[in-house]
Image 1 (spheres, rainbow, N blue to C red):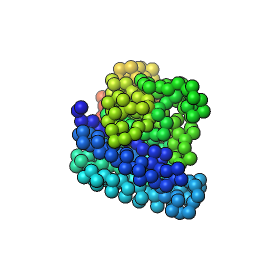
Image 2: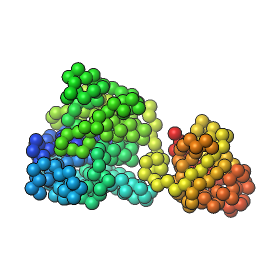
Image 3: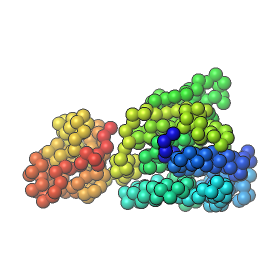
Image 4: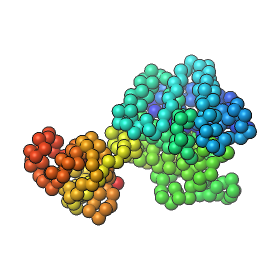
Length: 368
């Protein structure tokens, strides 16, 4: 099998024991399975939950804390236990692990987003296993339901992964909760996540984790939209479980279409991480050009500008009836666009004394 880049996400329920503490047996099983991937020449990035679940017992909590302060304190204790456990376990395989603590705020800046990509690329180049978790000790919004699932999707897109494997305590997606209905139908393969499937996915998760099946379905949908063609949600046992999964023999649900195109990092940042600074309304001709012909947005097709923004900011692009068509990174400020909207390219360049022909280049434009 050719070398693959694989993102593995492990949830709290797959790492902790019944009392909520870190299960060294489970952790060692996961590291053994990842080591098998490495032995087969694959690159692996690990997204690991478990810091809060691993730490709350040492703080004297009888169960997982529900208040933010308790979660943050538990994460501060548990994160050290978690990374130490992984470091020791991987050392038995002569593998080196590296810790990265991230929040979505780290991706909002285009420079920070590129830095994250560069760091991960260098670690993989050096045969290191990056272990990523959210910085739960200082963040608040990022502690909300299912965020590590989405983080795994965004990271898999960022590094252009071939596979995203989400390990959980339920062996795949069902049309109903299999714990409540033993006759629930399991989905073994789904080419794409439909709105109906997303609607039927339940929010319930285990008492030791924050995510449920819905967050995993949303993560799969996002990863596939970013060009990750092979996604797996399910479970497994033993050191060969990840090998079996990429060989198509996993106990779970496979998601994705093999012809899904990779989305460049610049467009990923625009689509998922950038802050919207304004709105541009375009005429039907421009709408047809950007949506159907894949062309850049030119000043001649712009009818209205709303908001105040600078060159390099990200704006929404809408039709005149208010329908959102996409968003992109502009080459002009709002004041400049006001002066050249509706004008041809030559006149626009002359008016602004700019080298740009496009208001938004197609390489910096995401359409819906």
